[in-house]
Image (tube, rainbow, N blue to C red; front, side):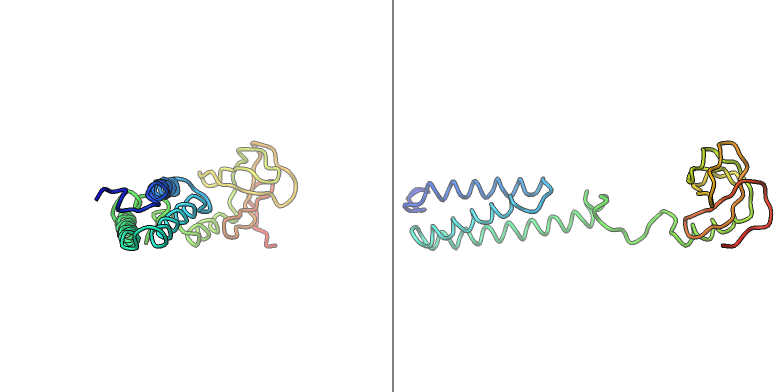
Length: 176
């Protein structure tokens, strides 16, 4: 008995639907989106099973279901292992247990030390820009008027990641 005889009268349609399902699943793996290719592949696979149960060999339908489940399980195992130790583990898609950057509370406490210190506007502050304060370039915003590049600025308030400055040298810091 040949392969096509085993599939019965729907042999050609079965093979075409299997190829379409395989191609759609591969396309789904490599394209972002809402799963249209994956849904098409799944529908093609369901069509193969229905054709084999209805007009072909029910035994072949069970083989196709078993093989599809095996491939899905092996694919999931491969993806999970890749997320743990493989290429995906180094991807930005996988969350890490720790971060090697600074956290927001550290930034907030570092910025609050700048209150009352003077610096120079590196860019024109309209109202936001960059100033050099205490030897460091920081993003700042003015409390009101625009400040020209090169003018002296004083940190008035530092709240979270926001640093407010006003024109002029160091004097007593203002609370607002």
